[in-house]
Length: 179
Image (tube, rainbow, N blue to C red; front, side):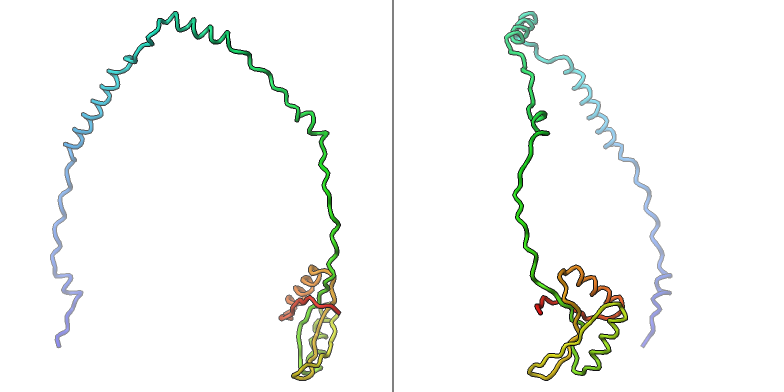
């Protein structure tokens, strides 16, 4: 099988000579200039040839003057709201909102062994927060939950959860639980 050298083959071709530069399109230039000149002449020729008013100039000015005399004067407006607005008051009925009775807890873990729950409780204590370990019995056995709270406001619960996240204690969830 013969090996073809595509690079060498490409070099052996002669390149086509560059095409000559196109000359200016004189015909287009002449036509364009003649159209512009013709349009300019047309505009100059119609200047000042507007149709005159059919009535005499003296009569039209007298008519316009008599119309001005018969028109009533524009009354000066009095804006009352400028005076009455500072004295105006709005009464709004506002209901007192009930404080939410929902209390929140943060659960940071649920473990099968009490030692794991106590270890997490100690890590939370190093962050300055107090956690509790509560045991709960379910169908799959005893679980030890690590919880913080209860919190009356969600804002404080979020603040403590972010404190725990900065300490690399992840997985804490805020729940709406009542004790």
